[in-house]
Length: 156
Image (cartoon, rainbow, N blue to C red):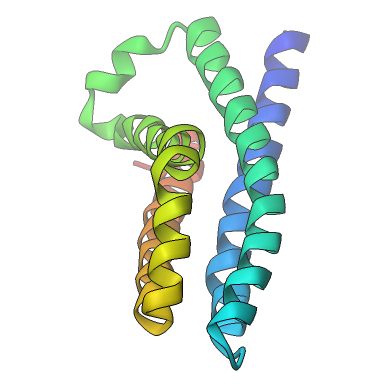
């Protein structure tokens, strides 16, 4: 029982740090960066802050994933993934997979270089695209978190 409680605490705190960070980047950092005068300032500042946030995101997504899979295993809740009333469980995995793919594969191998190149050539369009993607990911994440909280407390 103690392992279960610890896993749940780790899971919730990881999601709070991870999705809270996405909210901060989406609602505060990106709009602020777009106010900088030059593309060079925008790119440099965004790279500096986003680089630090990427580390936090990587750690918290790993912890959220490990603790989440542990909780499903301990509860033997695998069958819930096929039940519509537990849609939020499937969405937690989908959101986790999207962010994990972005943080560990796409961003370091493709997106970082693409961002630098595009931001220098078309800074407004690039930052607008990044902000729109962050809004989409944040919205999906928040709907999933709301569904998980409501669903895990019996509100279907």
